[in-house]
Length: 116
Image 1 (tube, rainbow, N blue to C red):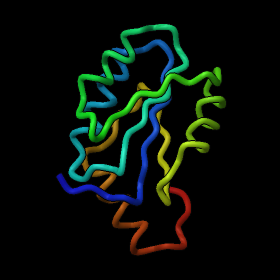
Image 2: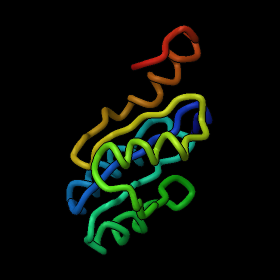
Image 3: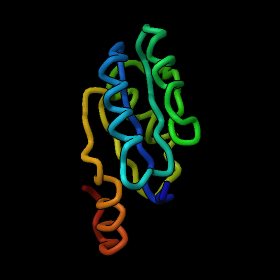
């Protein structure tokens, strides 16, 4: 699988493992993988971690976030980000199969772009 080191993806979730599974499927099925997909979970449901472990560990990792709420998870993503560009998605988002590929191409061609 082709992978870009310039985009890191964070998925914020709270107690919706079924939605999360579909979101992770959309990310694993990209035509280009991001540097990593980090799931930030501040919910009580142990199934969320189980869902994450069904996906390739070289791409998807699970983090139990102690920062409650959406903004707490976004802050956590900012603290953990290690790539030049960061994408933050919710557990109920679905990503077009070429999103990462197209974003990487646009960002490489137009370094002045800071938000997609």
